Image 1 (cartoon, each protein chain N blue to C red):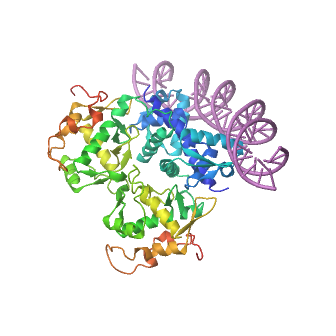
Image 2: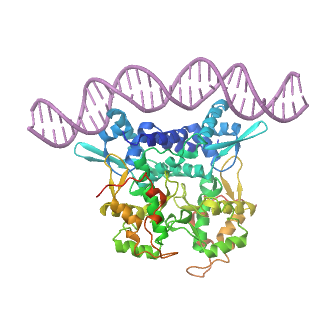
Image 3: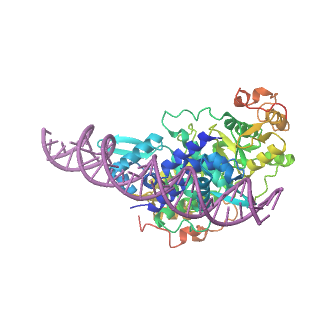
Length: 260
Length: 260
DNA sequence: CGGATGCTTCGGTGCTCGCCAAAACGTTCG
DNA sequence: CGAACGTTTTGGCGAGCACCGAAGCATCCG
């Protein structure tokens, strides 16, 4: 009798994501890359024809977009908002009462570092966000993401182009709740610029066929202190080698490229 | 072959919401109130026995919680995070390419003002948020929600208790993208305190059996200027009668209680 | 051209899952 | 007590939909 339309709206969107094959497709695309239909079929674990039907539905709903190139058709997420929706739903996994183990230690590489549409997530991204916060370049408390003046100058000096798309309605610095770490990482235009910079500087390299990222020695070093040598010290001016590195980055779990 | 677990996780959560009956149940609960199983059955449009099965699944997944009282069982959303997930999914409705009309003028009352778990949404909430921003009490740009010092003092003077639960991890001022207005309204602890205050001051009254809120004359007056007489003027100090009221609040659509 | 590759459309099959009615359970009231 | 009410459990039914293989279009290659 009441808000009937709302329920149907909600259900159509959710049921679209609620199929295992389609969910696998969306997960495969959530790294931000564009994949061909055949690759997606392998990711989804179903036949090519079935996959084709799923892709048509997803395109029709506006969740993904297609780009035809030669005899291939490349699919990718339609917008950052879709990635956001997926992350939000992933974060709901631990709502279950007690039985669900804490998201499990599964997929160690994914937990360590991954791309989330066009920015970074995982341990490395969270550590980076917190390091930037400690340095006084961004302010992340209470889900409020702002870039300080010092931060703006610093990013400019690095040649980090986060002004692109300024006119668009996309937020500059969105705080995402990282679903594996349950702490914040940086999204928005700044997050996208950070990932682009990290790739250019070879801090991280994409692992083919996955949204996982491999953190290089350079990336680890950048986080450890090299990047922030010019930082504004907030509390003390002591040295900050590995001891200031977030615990997660020192543990056995961190995947670090051996040279290069 | 890759992140298989992620896809299943995503699909199980989404398919749970992806059923029309369950989605209707969640929508009915998204106002923040607790409803008995029978009422939910009517909202869902299915029989009591079917509803019972749905409710069991939702409880099992941790999306809703149950409180048994006498021979009734009252169900409500398990946490604000669930409401957030639902709103995010609702916001995905307009992703569809062109065919979808802009969320439609359906449910005028809901578009005007509604409760969203424990805070307000809709035209009135958006107008309120923007008025608070103009007054310099909060800062909402770029999805970053912060309360200014002037705002903190102002809210304290009003007796608006947004410090409750400060120790918890819940954000103080979360910026929600309003799915009907596509602009920001205020959630988080401040949002909850604002709704409580608005109800106490009779700015809004809950419409029974719905998440819609009716805006009273007092509520309209508060927004129009009475509330902000002590505001810090940002640009000019001119008068601000109806002309500064957001357009949406002046139109024919706004439902205003006649003397209450 | 003809054959290979990538993707989509078409028909047909099977199974999951939402649905209801009836019965069982628990609570409140007369 | 027993009757009335609210809710859950059980059993059986039916429809929707995901799935596959084969055939139909495109595109690139020799």
